[in-house]
Length: 292
Image (cartoon, rainbow, N blue to C red; front, top):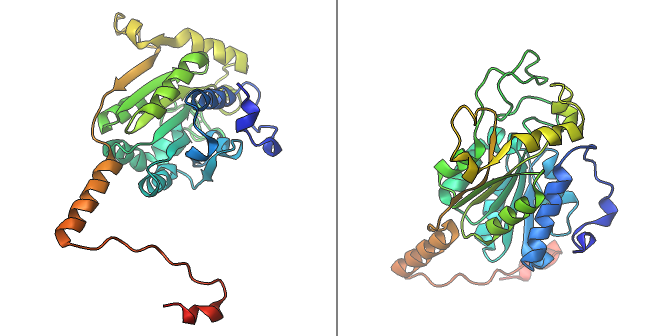
């Protein structure tokens, strides 16, 4: 496929560090969109703040780079007003589950038809290397120089418990599978989460002496295990493993469709007329007085 067709060439080169896996996830998203034959005008990609959220600046879709933790709030408004569009959110473990945690839970609970691709690198990479809700216990961060003492979020389990229709977890070491998970998420009617493990050699790797980006990729490859295989392993064998695969795939009512039915029911019951077409006011204030 022609990746350049989907990219804003004037925004190159990318700012992501050598060894970062974010570019792998970006290409997986583009392959998924290409295979579904979605036009660029059909796709809206929304992001918040962080390394992952810079992706909206590189892609040639309808894009919105929003405030920290709020991409799902913006995406919800877009999907409600233009339900025919394919709405995606690109976010990180900190952006989505720390300041954006409440939005994340309730978007999944509503089961709104949005596909979330969440880059999980266990750290706030862009804003200073602070601990995020997924930084492993004992790992170091700028806000935890002696090691994190908090428990971590299992992001995929959180989405599943909140009510998501589709939840999958992948790794940049298996990009073909990641491509497939994202494509299925885009096709799913309802809230879809694709959590993608990706190394951060700069902010996480250096503080925790993880070696180079290649070293971190090797570690990630050795410590991921498919959900089907994980089901046959003991708790001891899974202690240091990251389980990947499709974790939830169910059909349930979608929020926008239910909301539209409620509005129509309320309108019919109140016998209200259909809303009139909006009339734009003239740009010149002097002419506005003539508009009735």
